[in-house]
Length: 185
Image (tube, rainbow, N blue to C red; front, top):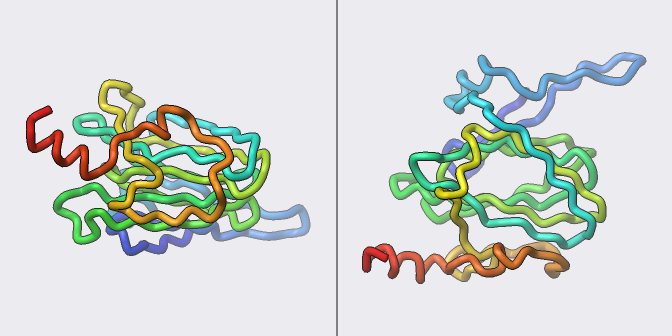
């Protein structure tokens, strides 16, 4: 595997090293030793699959609060997505920065997302499938998120939104959450 760190510390784009022959190719998609060597958490507690009918579907921006923080390894196995993460770690030099990466079935890239980074994606094709390997169990009581169109982050999605859940549409804006936190709400 080829690990390329992004501008968000601890977030990596992971490319496969294809071993080709007349049958096709073989590639390692996960290795505890290689993840540890790059300072990544190699724990996988859950694997999830997301199928999306329509191009333009948006899911996000989700994260889990302490103590149940999730790392994620995301890969698109059918179709294409624009995958976005926002760094929410107060101590991080890239705090509140975001990146977007195109993950497709053709490029076979994966994105490693550190804990306390909000995550979301938009489908770029109809009938898109995405796999997630999660570093902690989903804990609804710690689930949180921000609006996909929050001006505090300035994410430019590549397509108009065709589908989005009511929950994702209703997440609080960053500024509002900061005010609520300071008030102890």
